[in-house]
Length: 68
Image (cartoon, rainbow, N blue to C red; front, top):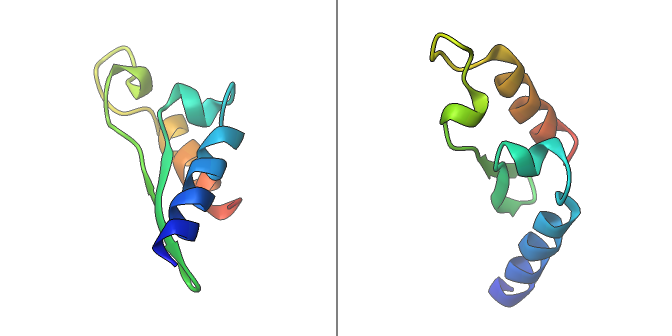
């Protein structure tokens, strides 16, 4: 099962190429029957000019999880 899960996670990552998910470095980490774990680093790619995380980056993250 672990092998299949790794393959599915790699394929899911490939689908994110050239998308906002790639720009924000949002990546699938794990999944199961009733859960999905994504990871997004908090860094300058998602900051506002004043150095605070942009709400749009947060929205993109939550929408990415919803669409999986």
